Image 1 (cartoon, rainbow, N blue to C red):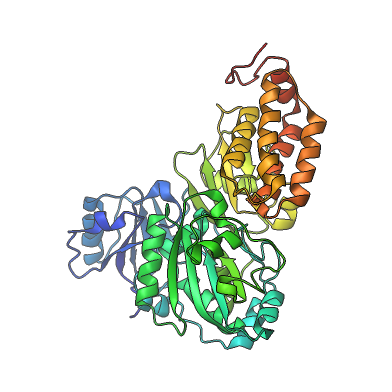
Image 2 (image 1 turned 60 degrees about the vertical axis):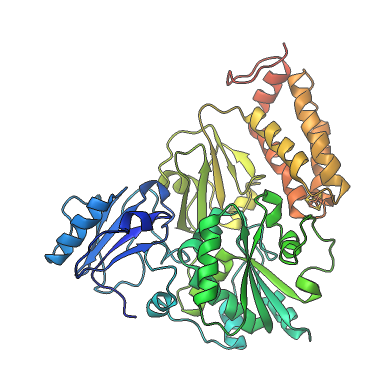
Amino acid sequence: MQERTTAVRVAGTDASAVVEGVEGGDVPVVAVGSTGARALEPLLVATHDGESAFVTNASASDVEAAADALDDGGLPGDADARVTHDAAPTSLPVPDLEGFAGARSALARCGWIDPADPEAYDAAVGFSDADADAVLDAAEGLHGRGWGDWSADEPVADLWAGVRERDDPAVVVVNAHGNPGDALLLESDPYAVLDGATAAARAVGADAVFVYASEGDEAAVASARTAADAGDFDVPVDVVEGPAVYRAAEPTMAIEAIEGNHRLEARLRPPGPDVEGVYGDPTVVHTARTYAHLAGALHEEASETRVVSVTGDVETATTLELAESETVAHAVEAAGVDAFTAACVGGKFGGLTTDLDVGIAPDALAEADLGTEGTVEVLGDERCPVAFVGQRANVASETNCGRCVPCREGSTQLTELLRDVYDGTYDEAGIEELSRVMESTSICAFGRHVPRTVRTAMREFDEAFEAHAAGDCPSGICTVDS
Ligand code: SF4
């Protein structure tokens, strides 16, 4: 299939409902996946003659009007943004609208190509046929993205070389559980993820690929299933759903879910999955973002970018992609957020901060004691940071897998220590010591990350903790014993 140079695309999870029944005449009208800028959706993109016009929150009549305009050789006149570009673009021209930040590499085709059509990906990019050595070369410098990646913030190539040297057939896992960026990629450009994953399978000598996603991300699961069925891959690709709980993204719990175990517990390590993974075979576990970046590197589109999702107290969550040189503040501004109390950066148990002028590259985030999950959870004006961390500790105590004492008992004790603040006792040293133990001895990243939210909040909002212990909530939100 050739790239469509004149077409009306409607981007969004529910784009099909808008497109249904629209008569486009000779103009193709195509429903595509979300761009990540979900507040703008359905987002109409009318493309003709090297220019695209964007209409936000489009209706069926907008689609009809755009198709008529294209049929007459023009673009719709009432567009919210316009972009000039190549005559035959193969990725979404990036508009100057909230929800977009300029650089798009991993997300380049989200909201542009038909996610159900392998020929659309083949025409736009072309499936890689790189051999194992070429894939390993392309992966040089590639680091795993997100806490669901066994190589989180670490280079993947060395691990792959070790897996490749083992005699057993290996397994490749795409862990798209829980992160909005991973879910977006599965929903809107699943073939990029599978192009990367099947290339990784060649690199490590794998005879199976499993795509693992949360049952709560229904659009992602459906799109992944369609892509797995319709694609022509040299290894079998299966899609497995896991429960919609945060801990289920932990790489060894992903393996447990793939094996059909309903009681999700993290596995003891060593050995790690690269030695003993799915059904005992050496297994590489990376997020959908990591594989999409690998696909980009294989097609010489590698770029230093990060997929970031802005969630929390925002009207609509947004996933965007920025250059690694950008800051968390830029991500939040690009998502259209202008007021907040703080942000929890880097996952459910990320670091809490008011200073968003921090680079989004992993080193900068780690130096600032923030997380690298690729999420920024905004806390709006009406939020109390002390209440927030108390609730988060409680979530940890109720949803950990129970496998190890530091996390199981530690998160319960942490919750109690935070409750004590409301009763007049702020045991700062006790919380810090407990945090140190949890961070250094918990089996998996879930427990190691839990104290970070509390620790960073204590540093940033020390006066608020002291005030609560003295019987006052500065935000006026909490009921405190005085
Ligand atoms: S750290 Fe928590 S989630 Fe991980 S194994 Fe221990 S109890 Fe389970």
